[in-house]
Amino acid sequence: MRPQSEALVVIDVQNDFCPGGALAVADGDAILPRINGLMTEFATVVLTQDWHPADHASFADNHPGAAPFSLTQMPYGPQVLWPRHCVQGTVGAAFHPGLNTDPAQVIIRKGFRPQIDSYSAFFENDRQTPTGLEGFLRSRGVTALTLVGLATDYCVAYSALDAARLGFGATVLMGACRAIDLNGSLAEAEARMAAAGVVMAG
Ligand code: VGL
Ligand code: ZN
Image 1 (spheres, rainbow, N blue to C red):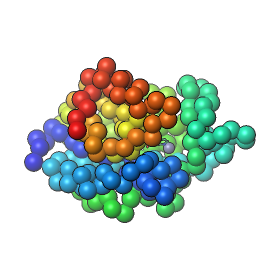
Image 2: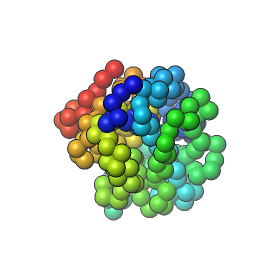
Image 3: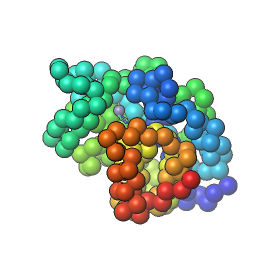
Image 4: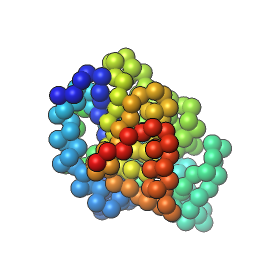
C-alpha cells in the first residue's frame, strides 16, 4: 500500500474514449487491467468523467459547417471541435464496464457548462473555474498524484499540468494512458509536462 499522502487519479475511462466509442482512442481499453490493479495500492482513488450537455460548445455539430477536429476560438483561447461525445446520461458517457469503479471515493464530473470545455480534473479550460478536486485532495492530506487514463495528450496532460501548478507531485504512468495524438499533440503535451516537472513513468 502506498502512503496516505498519495492518490490515484483515473481520467475519463469512458465508453466514448474506448474502441467503438464516438471519440475512440486507439487501444483505449488496453489500460483497464493495469488501472484496476493500481487501485488496490492507493487509499485515495478519484475518477473523472467527461460529462457534456447536448448543446456543448466543444461539439463540431453545434457549429454549422465546422469539421470535427478543426480549431475554433473561444473567449478562453483556441478550442478543438470534437465529435459529439460523453453526453450526460448516455452509454458513451458511462465508465467502461471493465473499469472497477468500486474503490473510488469521489467522481469528478467536468465539461457540464455549455460554453466552456474542461480537460483538466482541476479547472475548466479558462484555467480558473475550479472543479473542487483540489480542496478534496488537500483536506485529505494528499500531496502527490499518480495519473492514468484517457487521453494522455488532453485530459491526462491538462490534469497533470494543473496538479504540478498547484504544488502536487505529479506522475503520469504513460503505459496506463493512451493518446489521441492530433497534429503532434502528444509530443507537445510530453514537452509541456517535462517542463512543468511532471514525472512521466512507464
Ligand atoms: C477528452 C477531448 C474531449 C479527454 C475529453 O478525455 O482527453 N478529449 N473531451
Ligand atoms: Zn469532452
